[in-house]
Length: 253
Image 1 (cartoon, helix red, strand yellow):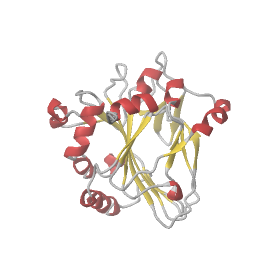
Image 2: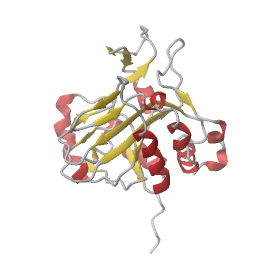
Image 3: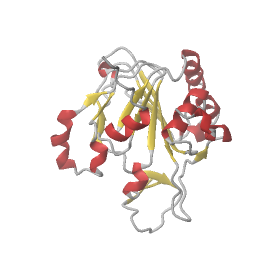
Image 4: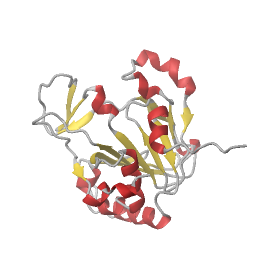
């Protein structure tokens, strides 16, 4: 019997809206990332700490030392494969820590807003939001479809400690009205990811997470990448360009 041909992460991501890649970061690499995060202060408004969650927004502005630690050869290889040899830029970075027993949950949603440097009235861009000086906007669908979310798990993650649940193929529906969610979420799957693994996702993939019922934490670095350039005069607020070695085609998978 002929074995099935393995499906590449890029193909699965395009078809299902998500893919799981285990063993991308070693235990030593993950531990080094956690040491850098744990060394940070928490005075910035980008830090949010409660008994149920610890989060750092605009992560790489707050902790620039993480950037070279994240760009391991394995991650660079993944990015080149996903973007077919083009050099993407980072457009968003967040750290999430869901402590053991956390009752924090995230309702079903799509990630449809992007952070930009200023407000401009542009065709296809809107609605706009300005919360605490952070300007976000819903861009045209083609911009959202070109973003790839990379969630690096620093702990083993399953249903018990709040693993993400996704609706396969939901990204192909575009922006989904809330009243349509019940028709789709019956198809949801739980994305169990081992420590050091990646969950890849399209922002338009319908997703949610449940409360933790485990004694294990769920610590995740959430990164978003894109090759898209925004209209003249508008910039991704957190944009970071990757160093030249990420462009090398021989790293493509």
